[in-house]
Structure formats: structure tokens, C-alpha cells
Amino acid sequence: MKSKTCCFTGHREILDSEYALLHRRTREAIMTLIDKGVERFIVGGALGFDTLAATLLLEIRENYPNIKIIVAVPYRAQAKGFSESDLAIYNEILSLADETVILSENYFRGCLHARNRYMVDESNFIISYLRKESGGSAFTTGYARKKGIEVIKI
Image 1 (cartoon, rainbow, N blue to C red):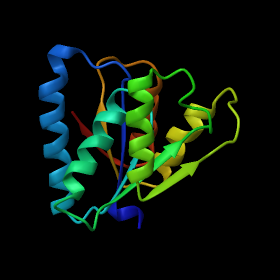
Image 2 (image 1 turned 90 degrees about the vertical axis):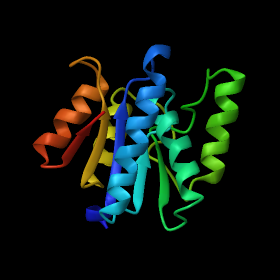
Image 3 (image 1 turned 30 degrees about the vertical axis):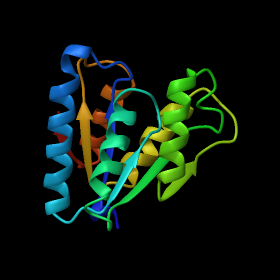
Image 4 (image 1 turned 45 degrees about the vertical axis):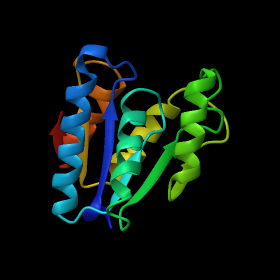
């Protein structure tokens, strides 16, 4: 199943000036992977790029009902502190996902890294949105490279 799985990593903040291009390139990358036989997509459930990827997948699934969307949640209360509108989108994504994996009941130092490693360990591809070479997304992309996972940079 790993050979047919892709995960995502990217920043929580998306610049308004980048959004349309990022949206288009991410859609193109997803469609290319679907054409290669990828059927499972794992998103991290965070704001920003995770939300963009999840909403794109939900749209694409309307025409490709065989694809599966898995949300990997690092800890149960991840959405605590989300704005009302972000929480509504998050809850909709969870309700429409094919599977939700909650990796920990409680927050602990390193739980986000644990979630990121889980996603990479389950995948053969990663779609990566990086504006800087530090932080969680850079770590996750580097971890994927070390594991021999194909990195698709957006």
C-alpha cells in the first residue's frame, strides 16, 4: 500500500500572493500521482498547506472516488485555538476523510514530529511546500529524502 501513498508537508502560513499558484501546482502534482496509480493521500490536519491539500483532495475525489484521504492528527486537541471558521473547515475535512488517525490523546513535546514521521513512513511520495530550509516542513522533507521517498517540491 505504501507504493500507492503520498503525504504532504508545508507551512501553516501561505502568502496571499502565492495561494493561486500553490493551489494550481499542488493540484497538478496530485493529478500526476493519481495517473501513476497513487490512491492514498495522508494530510496532517494543520492549518495552511495541510488544509489546502485536504480541500483539493476532497474536490478531486468527486471525480476519482477510488482515492482515499487520511488525516493524521498528532494529538486529539490539535484544533484547540483554531478560529471559528478554521475549526469549521477542519471538522468538515475530518468528517469527509476516509480515515482519521489520532497518534496521541494528549500533546507532548515532539508529537508533531512523530506525526510527520508517521506520514513519511507510510508513504512512497511526499508533496512538499517549502519557503525556508528550517522548521517542521524542512525536517519532514529531509526525513523523506533520507528514507528514499520521492519528494515533489511545489
